[in-house]
Image 1 (cartoon, helix red, strand yellow):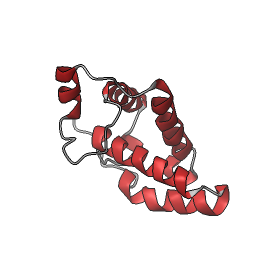
Image 2 (tube, helix red, strand yellow):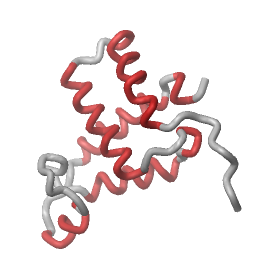
Image 3 (cartoon, helix red, strand yellow):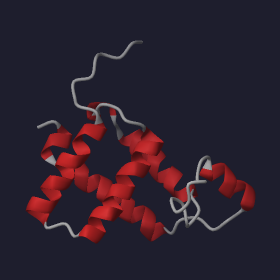
Image 4 (cartoon, one colour):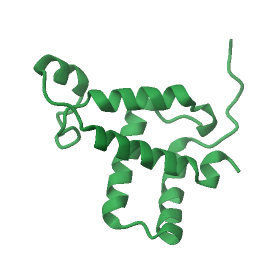
Length: 119
């Protein structure tokens, strides 16, 4: 069945307003902003750039499952294409649970931002 036309903005269009809000209202440090930007980038890699009203719980589950399968130094090299298959083949250590939780917290924080909820 065809889906109705999107009623919300693309997720990518809300990234910069989200960070401006975090800087102005939450006093986000530059260190935390870099980490949250990495989370956004990884989220887009896994879930794609869609209207925010098209994301659901299954998307978050897929993202978290994917994060758990990444090797510990993911994102540090331009050779990171098809990184999960490479990690599976090499049997390397995966990202720590604490890192996965930090990414989840960053995504949940942005979900609470009014313009991401569409309110």
